[in-house]
Length: 191
Image (tube, rainbow, N blue to C red):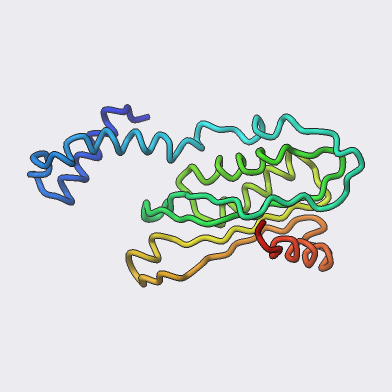
């Protein structure tokens, strides 16, 4: 694994590629390698998180068998293909059988996966996998909508394009009425 000093040297090389060898003369760029590496420690903190630890503290569902939905959870991630940010919102739902998770745990699972080099499809799938593995729910649903920097600032340059991915498991996959109820809940007006 590379050290912090090696990472800063790599950033310096990239700055030289972008700015030319005179980049060190600009005051605004002198500490940029250090700042970039420190920001990456935060942006990619998901590699230091564990979904089992996040979801280990669950609660008795006390017979609740309806949809549990946390919607409009904002996130930012980094595209592994171009190192460009993508950002959006996620809707995470499940129907418990015996155990429920604290609501902040759903947001933390999203953060764990978003704070890694990613693609949107993988985030969607892994959140659903984690919930199924740890909660054993009757159904799991994850819907993510995001705009991608690699689509906005390069290539086709489409500013308004939104990519949507979904993972429907259990009753959300098998039963149209469960999916319909979920979609109705997601589309409720904001508070």
